[in-house]
Length: 194
Image (cartoon, rainbow, N blue to C red):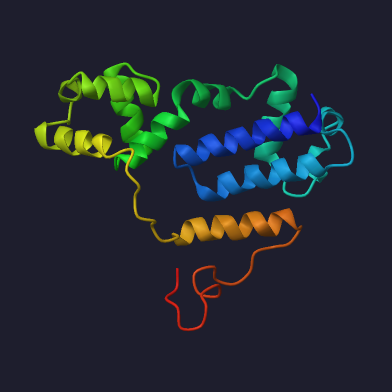
């Protein structure tokens, strides 16, 4: 397994952790670790096997453990579980419908569906009311949102948490560090903060 493949698995893990609304600092740590590994001048596999992977910037004990697991078994068990459990398109559709990640996953489990298309079909078949907690009003709201799915939506403002993520990503890409307040320091003069 080369550095790029290892970094890709950490990036995938970070993305799924973000989808299930894990701690944003954990997500950021895995993204930074992936960037560090991708840029490492030596094979990270060798560092993991020799117990020296924590010498890399941003690799702590938790990430080192995940790397050991990945190198020894070829996978990260929690990542594999998340990949089985969480369908990004399903979670994305759920968010579009105004549902949180957990509610989207619970809805999918109750309906026995795994993809956004299967959820759309279940809704079209009138199966939403079979889900505990979905009454006629909620079903009508979800069906209305699904009906308007192809229509353009007005752009929403940039949330402060997303602004921090963007600033952190840019800083990491150039080897820097985010500083200041992304919500106020970035606003043009006279503009409302993010």
